[in-house]
Amino acid sequence: MPNLSALPHLSMHADGVLWVGLALVLATLMGESVLRLLRWPRLIGFMAAGLLIAAGGGGLEALALQPGARAVVDAALAMLLFELGHRVNLRWLRANPWLVFTSLGEWGLSLLAGWAALSGFGLGGMPGLAVSAALACASPAVALRLSGEFNARGQVTERMLLLTALGTTLSILTVGLLTGWIGAQTSTHWWDAALRQVYAIGGAVLAAGLLAWAVNWVERHFDFADEAAALLLVGLILLVLSLTRALQWSSLLTPLLAGMLLRLYSERPRVWPRHFGTAGGVLVVLLFLILGLSLSPQTLAQGLSAGFALALLRVLAKLAAPLALGRPSGLSGRQSLTLGLSLSPAAAVSFVLLLDLGASQLVLPPQLLDAGFAAVALLLLGGTLAARWALGRAGDIKSPVNGR
Image (cartoon, rainbow, N blue to C red; front, top):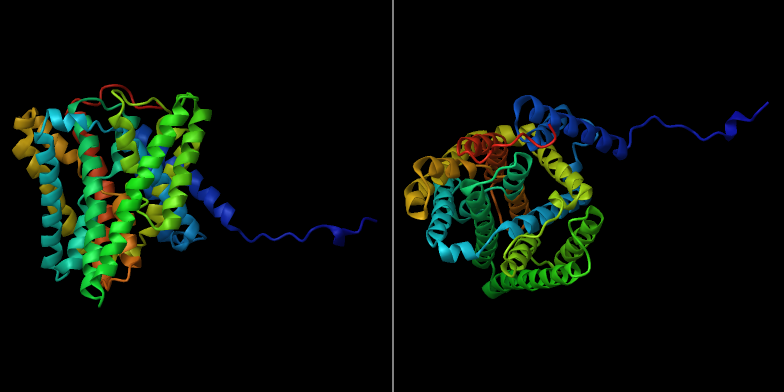
């Protein structure tokens, strides 16, 4: 008789790999369903899957608290920000200076509108201004997904990408400066806080130059249009991301500036697979899945009132500047309206900036961060649908949806 005791002891306890696999399956199915049935962006389904899992409990409820989840978020954002930066033609600003005023106007009004909304709930002051700055930029991930999934092409789409990149840069810099300023007010040595911000921003500029140089050098020997070669580009971005994290430089600013620098010396953007191939695509799915998992029902409920007011005033502010400056910059009235709506979404960059504010040494009221996270959820779900409608209304979406 065989000795059954020699067989391995089997445990039916579900481990983390099982939960991650199930979450990916659910997110993918929901993403494809909303795209094919409703013609909504897949990322709506990705985040909705995370929200459902967070609401129902399960094995992933603490995923957002794990260092590995933050590493995935940082990696996905690094690739998205690099891709966005490379899509931005800064020469356009010299040819059409009204775009500079539009960018400063829509971002500045969003900052003030958000601050006013938070002040109405007793959450203003410098901490409220920092949270409003984190939410003042449009979402790079949403802008890229909309332009890619729906083949959006035209003046509104290109301006959406440009204003998103510029606004994201302003938000990253402003949150860093406000964090240093608030820290200086509570520190006996104010120059220590200021020096940390100069170090983080200066290091990011240095790392961005290094990444742009490395990509430009490698491009002479590889064809990035090939997905296998695109993995090399992913590796370069992740290596520089690891360097910035280790040296505590700005991991958000570095890839965005690197993409801008690379495009600055090129008349036309490079051609590579969207999100640099399959690996990048999986990271983007995980990014929105983790985003949904992190926004627990308790957080959303506690910050819903202030978050709704913040989101509403921010959307109105995004509309004001393009409507006022659209015609001088060369847009029609309809294009100006749709451009403002296309800037409605806020997502992962704002989420990460809020996380960093919460993890800093600043004393922030819990209700303030709850309001910020609730606004992120509202602006990602509702704002993305508004932006999708706006691009269609502007005539920038003409071809069938990718994958249909």
